[in-house]
Image (cartoon, rainbow, N blue to C red; front, side):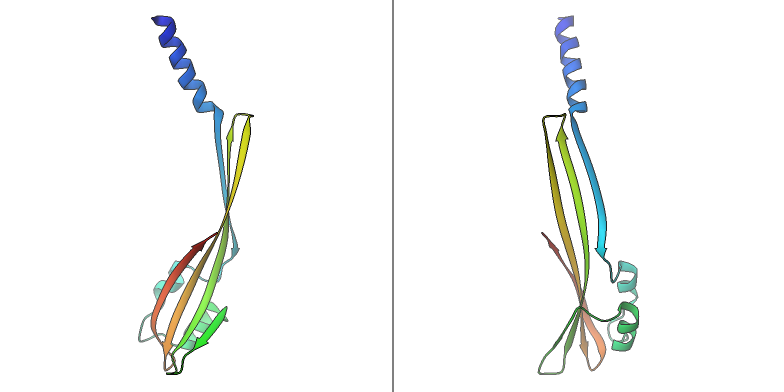
Length: 119
């Protein structure tokens, strides 16, 4: 009975040592952060303030009614490596893009939102 318990304890202890996980994240392009976005105020912030705070947008859309939407993108990459002792190793890369969209009516911020894409 003692041998079985000792063998079970050793098996559980060794199993935890066999799996390794390593993760690394890095920014590829950062234009804005949450602190910058939180300073923006609907109905008060204007295009000059946004341009000064975030720079030139990645893209601009203009609609027939004069409404404009400016888009800013942040890109980052996450690399995760999972290994099982020396038997195999899997490397998973994930690219993440966050798009900040800002809607203007008559040059003033009326709405903004953040969309996230993972590849």
